[in-house]
Length: 288
Image (cartoon, rainbow, N blue to C red; front, top):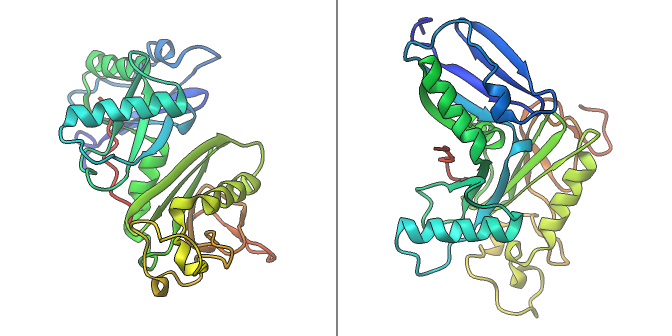
């Protein structure tokens, strides 16, 4: 790729803006200020000259959730209204301070939704216009990592899988099964994130929509809609009826793999328990 056509990446990290392109790298610390105001001080090493600018926002600035679309939503406006309602209900955020969006192609399956500060989105659009860039897209850190690694994920149909992304003191974990998102959680961590990851996975394992009740307990109430056949679940469910494990993919995570889970694709070493080894674009590929 020539220097004239190469894409430039603008990243909002926890404490700085970083511009990385064919003309060099520039960094502008936030110094406790608002990201939108700090971006005004970032000067590219050379004019954009129409070059594509892709923007990646660290998960610390975002809010994620998995949207389960109710039956009866027919239009994009109805889906947008329901998405806004869910972000307000779960995270207490909404317009005009926040911009929310979900995968526009995921109408029949749960979708991964993302909310970003509207001031950040406006600041990025202004930066691109001032310096001659063509804004190619804005994406969250977790979504960017998932999209980069997804083609390498492999798990049997019906087996739960998760991606753990640890970056700059924040752990974001997404869970899917049989091609559908099941959950996403993000929180700051002060260590390697192993305890937080284990607690997230255990909490998901206790949630009813991840359990095919008739598999583990023949006397339980009828199985939930969408549950898979017992033969496909392998050892994913414990005898108590909860999710016991699955495939864990990771990027930047160097902590232990929780008991019952096995390592998948890894960008950084993961340690097995008991061993010594070590606008806004949310059009993520569907899980699975």
